[in-house]
Image 1 (cartoon, rainbow, N blue to C red):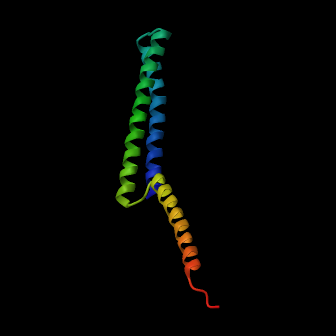
Image 2 (image 1 turned 90 degrees about the vertical axis):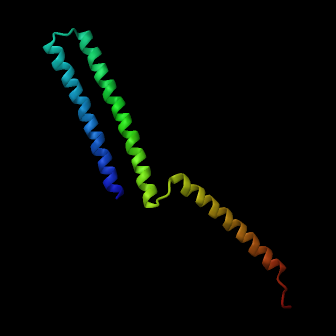
Image 3 (image 1 turned 90 degrees about the horizontal axis):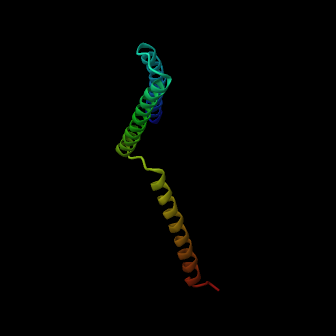
Length: 111
């Protein structure tokens, strides 16, 4: 399942990279068709690049939210939650060890 999600995200990001290339090609074509100056062509390319970049960031955020939602639906824990639980288990193990030692010290000896 995680592989499928990862491949889907990479496909989306690849499409965005392709979109960036297409934006550059489109800017060059428009520059040629409308006899735009180099400066105007660069401005157009910047606008198209910024738009593509913003769309990429939006898509990444949407993908991230979807992955978190799917993980939650599947009952998977986050790294932070796993780390917190691991720390808590270690603390409980230490406390249990102290209690065992205390119980051994309090136990009557058979001598």
